[in-house]
Amino acid sequence: MWTTQLPDRVEASPVVVADGDAVAVGCYDGFLYVLAAGDGGIVWRYHLGDAVKCTAAADPWDSLVWCGSHGRRCAALDVRGRRAVLDMELSSSVSASVAFDASRRHAYVCLLDGTVMALRSSRCDEITTGVSAGERDGQHVRVQGKRHGASPAPTASIVPPVV
Image 1 (tube, rainbow, N blue to C red):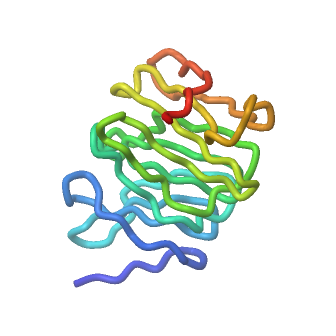
Image 2 (image 1 turned 180 degrees about the vertical axis):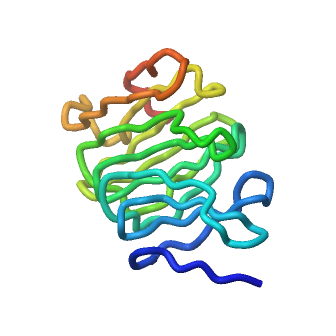
């Protein structure tokens, strides 16, 4: 078996990604690390601004790895392509894992300021943001979505609450 020493504290659980070829884990140095499942070697890392305390999660439709940080960022990462598909600056820190609803293609992100966001994606060609049903106008949610790569920038709008 293997052991890999990351440069700082780890509080998050690792998640198996890329069809079992890799393991992703967040670190207090602000990076999400992708390790080779076979030998533990660092394959790639992505900087999320500040400590990554939450466990990363892979969405069930595109196998993107989603992770947030205390740097007020949330990213959806293509581990195989070693690139960020989405990197959002948020109004507050993220300390909980992203949850998914495969039937609606929603990713749910919770922020430390009490905000709950719903992100909707269709093969990441269009990404929209929303807030919890208790939020009336969404004014306190400041999201600037940034897409890296050749695709156009994501669209940002409020996702109506499902009642």
